[in-house]
Amino acid sequence: YGPLDPRGDVKPGPDELKAMLLEQMAGAKIILKPRRPGPVIMVALYNGLGAQGTLEFLAGFKNVRAEIIDSLSLAALDKYDCVFMLQTTSLDNQDYLENLRRYVEEGGGGVLFQHDLCGLRRGTLGEATPFPEICARGERQDGDAVTVVREHPALPGLQQGAQARLMYYDHVVPAPGGQGTVLVADDQGRPVAVAGEAGSGKVIFDGSINIASKTEGGCGFEERKLSGFNAVLTRGAIEWFTGVRLQAR
Image 1 (cartoon, rainbow, N blue to C red):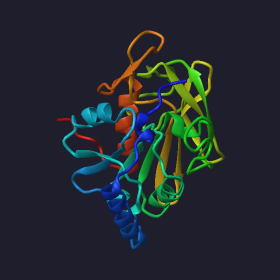
Image 2: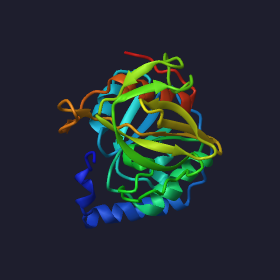
Image 3: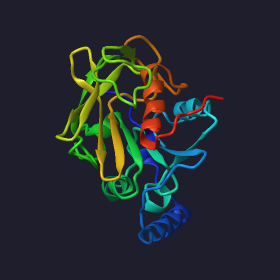
């Protein structure tokens, strides 16, 4: 198995609980409507494995502002054009399954789910995903080689048949639902990234993870600025979600 985020063992204190309650109350009053990105795209990175490396990568674009978040309340989500759900064991069932779906369908947001959150049974919520019609469940596999199955706006510069490498030694195989489109596959032809649309928004289930293996074969991991396929998909996902091309500094 790949790494698990230890954040799931952290218990919120009284002040944090009060802030969470106030945020939930604010979220109950929100009426979600599709938003148009402004001159700077707002990207939320849910605090998990790969958050630091993703933040460092996105700092290289002048029209992106990325922030690490710990809440999936509607009040928190509504501030952002798209959200990256990085692997974590710290999730609230209702916020994860219901709020993210509303954020996409009603708010027109884009969400990328990584690794265990592609419906891997060992994950915090098991095989449950907010969009089973796009990704029904996941299964872990070793291997870091992927091939583009079809050209897609979320894969800028990669043509059908192009090959790339994942940063980490393993990946989750997201089983596509009836509305899921396979973008890339591993060396056995199994899906690695699946995309789809829901309501006014878009989602991607990415079986990779935005961390790097420390050694050959995957022993250990570290936060590192994104490279390879992870960098391409991160940039491409934001551009596909928002319709805005990212501008390098």
